[in-house]
Length: 123
Image (cartoon, rainbow, N blue to C red; front, side, top):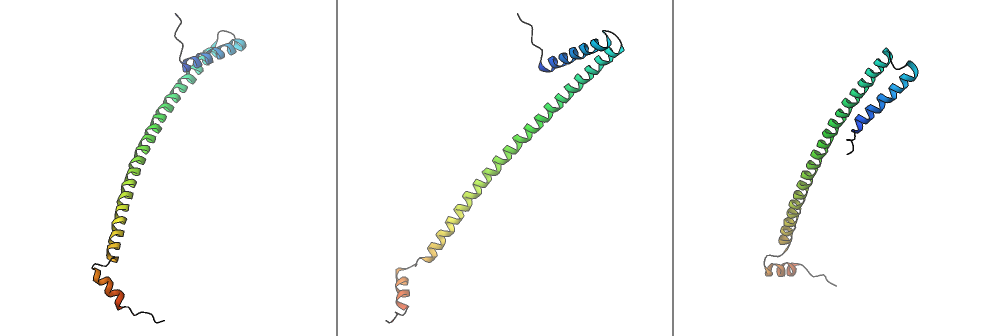
């Protein structure tokens, strides 16, 4: 069986520790206060990196939530515009129908009288 692979942040932290340790051994030897301080600094960098990663993850979730909310609102507004458009179209159609009805003669005799009462052009 193979060993469990370390997570990417853990692998990165370990790689950083190894690199710092090799650098210090090459310059200050394997022991001493400089090496201990360097290890402390590496641990602090790793801790801050984890904190920054967690903060980025939290902000990403906030942004995703905002995007979902805006998408939902956009759908609601779109639906409302469609409803209003249908209502306006029905209102316009009703008004056109009313105008057509008003333009039509109500009795056959009225149409005849209107045309008869107009003087004919002489020519």
